[in-house]
Length: 117
Length: 114
Image (cartoon, rainbow over all chains, first blue to last red):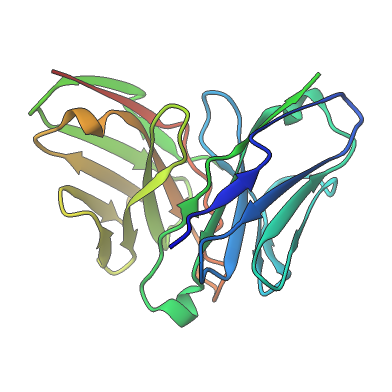
């Protein structure tokens, strides 16, 4: 069973640029959530994708967008980068509870460390 | 809105017990607990559902007081491997597939020394 993988591991961008982060979900998982974790903070929910559609969003501006592909992998895109976007970006995959019974766990990837200068 | 966790940090000797608390200002459907070691991904520990159902690991227990909108994680006979930052993630809604919109607290740093 392959776990959640993310790429790249680290990334350095300058303010105003755009970035794309990638996530491959755990085998069989159809739901992907993205989180932003600033230094010393807990992960903050950005959005979730289920069956290739956005299925909920946290308090993040529209310049944070995403995609989910038919193989359930996902991308997080951030436009017009700001210094405050510097953080660890985590994706987490899970099964939809309607189809999985009581499998509520989310499996997190190792994250992408984004630094905006 | 972020849940409030207490204590912010705790230091234990191996074999001691600890309790980590989590309070939310909103009505809850479930509370999720995760542990994150430095430089690693958070890993699932426990979920408590409204109505009393629990799912998690054998050596960790937790409680969920729906009326008080609080949850507590109980770590007994702590081991060195318990060290890490513990996050609670209250979930206030259950709506089909959109029930993982977790907003985690700032975490509780647990250090277990030999």
